[in-house]
Length: 284
Image 1: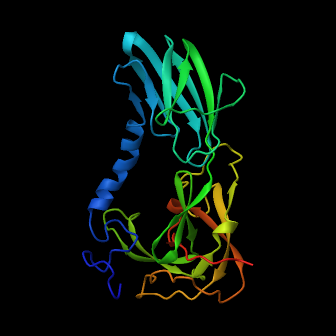
Image 2 (image 1 turned 30 degrees about the horizontal axis):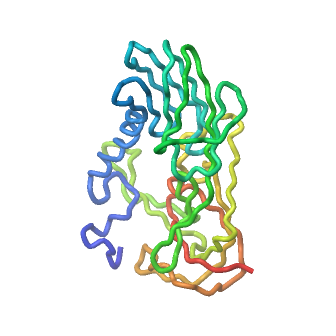
Image 3 (image 1 turned 120 degrees about the horizontal axis):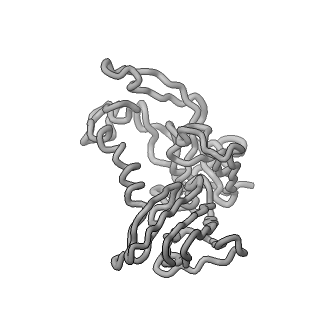
């Protein structure tokens, strides 16, 4: 990079590679998923209840107090779906809790096939009375599209647990290949289409196209794989680069330089070369 925007890092820091600057990212990154999953369920201090803390397609088996053997299985495509179906088996009745995120709007719960009712969480936890035997409940956790103010008058776009970004069309060049593991390569991505856009936040629209197979593609965090998208009206603007490989700060109150168009935003983790904070304008 020239000039280098990372004063504490080397000029190779923005390369997509095995260990382009520090090896700690390569070592630490894989710890996230197992730690997330292993801490998804907790017991209450009295050991009489089970709490589903981190939402996802997980299951656990545990013996609670009074020798209550409990298994909980969650069937869901979350965070790529708003619906979670939980099946609980227990030798004795107990209270099961599930965390309801603060961004949920109009969430419902349906227990054992009964009509859905509005959620009523206390301190962020929804209580479910689980009988001896099998209890099944379905959570629906819809969310509104929200925007977050960012520097220079720009905004970030979120819905529920996911941040959305514009996946810039790109070319790919291999810079280096690891001699011990040839699948590990250092990559350079270069934009092959315009990326300098402002968006009108009033036109943000969410879409969910569930996979017909009922299963997410693997890996789902890849370009074009997410069933969730947000479209928005955008217009091209003048947005300078600050160096050979990175954009300058977003322009404040930019003027459109061309015709309006529709951009499709996808979850941030599915993008490789991206714009995640946008200047804004008002469409006509």
